[in-house]
Image 1 (cartoon, helix red, strand yellow):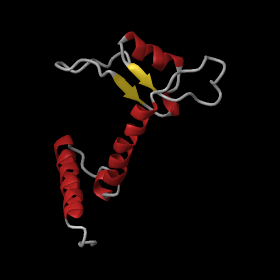
Image 2 (tube, helix red, strand yellow):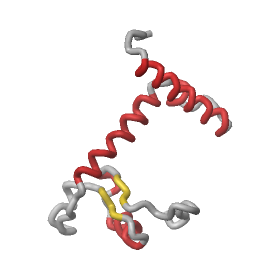
Image 3 (spheres, one colour):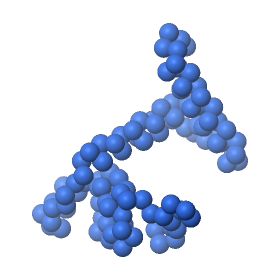
Image 4 (cartoon, one colour):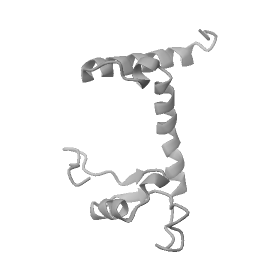
Length: 112
């Protein structure tokens, strides 16, 4: 994680959400040193041992939007298994999958 550099213009985000798999003191410390609020729930084996963390539950719930997006992108087999070797070709198929998704949303009668 020490090799991660902030984006050039924007800087570090204000908050970073993650699931319980990222609930480690090292991760929380790394984020705190950069002024980023960790929106990560505690694992059950950490509660009481490291103290309670106040969670920003509304921010954590918004994380589901990203999870759903990744989930429906993986429904496209070519994107989910990454058949494309080149990053440019892979990105083109991700864009194609998003276009296909939008077309399905715009025309709900087409269920093919």
